[in-house]
Length: 143
Image (tube, rainbow, N blue to C red; front, side):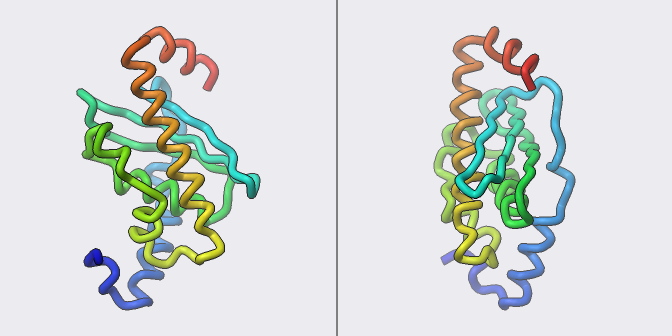
């Protein structure tokens, strides 16, 4: 059980809304080290822009056309992953996102799954770009 689970319900809700409404990670960046885009069954789309140095995640930025819950989940991915190595970041699951947020409605778990799935695609893209740097050049021209 994490320390977060010991917080009062109103503190969990406040944390959830602060995460959902925080805009510092919500932007497109030029020439990311990795990029991914995924659309969920609900129609929400998440784009993740990953910046890394020596296989350590420096920054995560995102864009979404989705609801507040999707925004909260995408932002949580950034909070949970920044500072981790690429290998460590693979351990972040939708459950970690839900736990981090503390107040994600049960019927919106698919938003955490969408954010995590997009993040996994970005991690895969990072590895592909490391093996074939020219793919990164082509990819950023399409963004």
